[in-house]
Amino acid sequence: MINNNQKTKGFTLVETLVALLIFGFVSVILVNIFVSVLNSQKRILQNQELMNQSSYALEYMTKAIRMTEKDMTGACSGAAGENFRVGTSPVSIAFLAYDLKDSTYKCVQFLIEDNAIKERRSTDGNLPSGTALPITSSAVSVERLEFYVTGDILGDNIQPKITIMIKMKSLSSSTNAPVIIVQTTVSQRKLDI
Amino acid sequence: MDNAFKKEKGFTLLEMLISIMIITIAVLPIYQAVFKYTRNTQLERENFIASYLCQEGVEFIKNKRDTNWIQGLAWDDGLSICFGSGCEGGPYGLSAWADRTIYIEAASGFYRYLTTPVAGDIQTSFKRKIVVSKPTADEMDITVTVYWGNKTMIVKENIFNWR
Image (cartoon, rainbow over all chains, first blue to last red; front, side):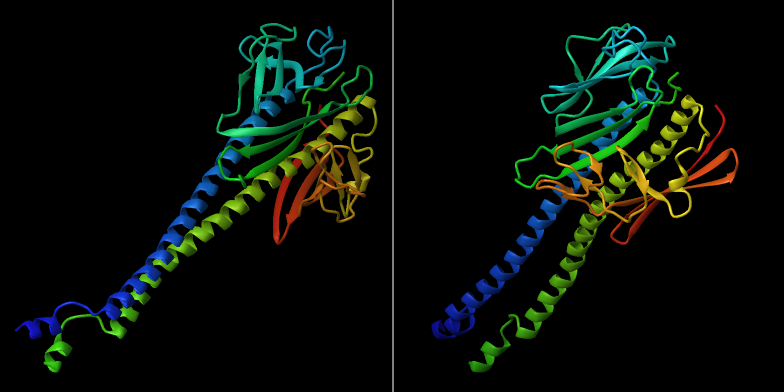
């Protein structure tokens, strides 16, 4: 009886080893696939966030810049008759933005600060000061913001145009976090005369 | 006794192979789907950047037209290089079509054409062709095409000689 039992129930050492080997082999493959799927999904979400944030910031800024006009006093743009005040540290731009609510032009400044694009809004035509409010999320890091302006000098007889470039990086622990560099140009809608 | 052992339940090699095959067949499509999503996200990124480059091309022509108006010139002055075979342009001006790829300049940060790129400048795969035609005297059709790899994005805009 004992003999019979031993011969039928249980596995031999070799059988156990082979079974473990196969089980281990299959589970390693499955776990690898699962981990790589998780990583891919993370990168996809990071890329989507980058596109959302950069398009929002670009659209927000171009919408305001398109509707600007010459600043005859220079209180906003820095010099009488110029359209834009471009700063280098931090990179910033100030101009008169059209306010739909009361159909007037108010000074607005966009700047890069603490790895975010921020905005300062004035209640009149003077350069705004004080706390700047972010227009990009803290989930992304704005690495670089650049403005290139042509035609904003008084009497140059050139229609103002601005090229904006944003370099944005996803905030994540991984070393190869996705980065996006977007650029567009916007020409002032109002004739600069 | 030997016979009894053979009758015991367990897996044969064939059963094992079949079960592994089924697992593989079940997992492979998931893996392929994720791979496809990754590819699509990459494509979406490229489309996204290209759409802003297209918009930029249209704005260059509009800006030139407005400058011509201010200066009292013919509204299409200086745009003849964009007629026919088209032109290419960046933030620093328009030039005749030369089939060049756009760089991201490290110093300025901008997408532009570079004749002598230096270390740090990134060569993108984007090419942008701006073609302007005048169906009537007071109408201009702007067609901006951005090419990269085997992909193309076309943006069309009509502008007029009306202030």
